[in-house]
Amino acid sequence: MSTKLGVSRPDQAAYMLRAAAGDAGRAYKRELIDLLDVRPGQTVLDVGCGPGTDLAALAERAGERGSVIGVDRDPAMLAEARRRTEHLPGVEIREGDAHALPVEPGTVDRAKIDRVLMHVAEPADVLVQLRHATRPGALIGLVEPDWDTLVVDAEDLETSRAFTRYTTAEVVRHATIGRRLARLAEQAGFGVETVRATTPVFRDFQDADHTLGLGRNMQQAIEAGHIDRDRGRRWFADLSQGTFFASFSLVSVICSR
Image 1 (cartoon, rainbow, N blue to C red):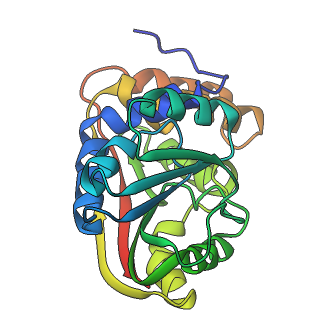
Image 2: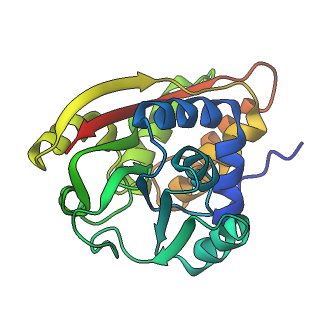
């Protein structure tokens, strides 16, 4: 088992597919799709579809008469999404930005945006775009983490806290977007129907390192002078020894047009 600090970013398509395949990823995605209540014949929009993780499940619910539109701006993600859905005639992959969705106004019955708003320039503007794209009566599913709630169990509690502070301040653009989802949805003109918070739990060090970027972000924190080098490296090495625990809060909001 490697305990060296990572410095390079993982392949993003592989990263997203692995994260979605884990227990925590499967559980919240299944709940989100259930709450969206996709009906046969509907048009479904997946904003920031990435490598197409959820497109097949959405297409199955929309049925032969329905259509699913996956939107992403990353060429590698688009290529992987097309490859994974080439056998699904009802799925269309479109290149586009969340701030300027490539769909006709008022044509979408169901929409989802999953762990994307934390990265975009203006989350409120993206939600306005979603409102324009959806029909009256449409349902929209939003899912985002709140990285202030990231906890990593370690004997060196202060370094764990410093790691979370660095993550929220420097790594994620909108690190507390999860707690703001319901308010932002209302401000965009949606009616908030459901708000749920789940807590993904990581018991495997390697899975947590991959998903949470423990080694990669710690190395960045050390290089930026936020955490002492020896202390940070010792903290990371100690995490791989014995029982491991980390968690954070993930907020899901279902709103109506």
